[in-house]
Structure formats: structure tokens, C-alpha cells
Amino acid sequence: DVQLQASGGGLVQVGGSLRLSCVASGSAFDAFGIGWFRQAPGKEREGVSCLNIDDGNTYYADPVKGRFTISIDNAKNTVYLQMGSLNPEDTAVYYCAYTSCDPQNYGLPNDPNYWGQGTLVTVSS
Image 1 (cartoon, helix red, strand yellow):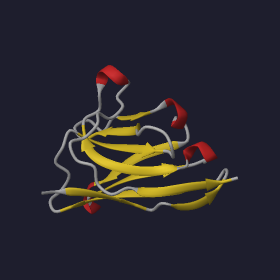
Image 2: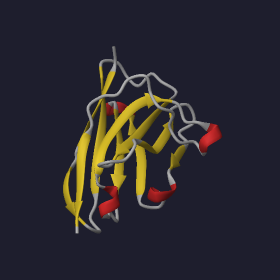
Image 3: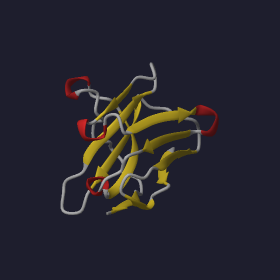
Image 4: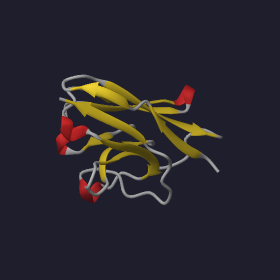
């Protein structure tokens, strides 16, 4: 089975940037889309961004629009989430997953069938 593994988290100061990576083990990406999610302490997991594999369209949740960018490098079987202008509200465990982008929900990612291991992002003030 092809699985996705998120990495690249760490501690960053307010206003800083960080790039998360999502690597597919096994064969190349084989799904409708790739989604990034996050779960902040004491909060429910939420969809952050989605990339539609077929047409390359990207979608973002309102809190991250203009600050986060999702991209794909097929040669490296890797999807990135470039995060900028980080603030403490971005502190969370971030996950990537195979999923589909929901046209009924502004293109945000549907909950996947499988959750891989997340990576912790901590934004300090």
C-alpha cells in the first residue's frame, strides 16, 4: 500500500515560515487529491488545503489563504505545504493524506480513510 508521511514540522517564531513535506512511499501518487489537515490542541482536526491531482487546482481554508501554498513535485513523489506569516493559531499537528477535494465545501479535503503520522508545528510569540 502507498502511504503518505508528513515531515518538516518544528518550532518557529511568529511571522516566520516553514515548509512541510508529504512523501508517498511506494508508487507515485494515485488518488483524486492530496489534502493537508491540522489539529490544534483541544480542537477538532480541520482541513487546511487540498490539491486536485487531475487538474492541479488548489484550495485553501480561509484562515490560511494568502499565507500557505500547496504544491506537488511528481518526480520526487512529494507534496509540499509552504507556510508563511505564521501565528500562534497555526500551532498544530499537521497531517497529509490521500483524499478528494470536496466541491461542496470550497474544495477543502474530505476526511481520508487512513491517517498517517503527523508533524508538529509550534509557533512561538
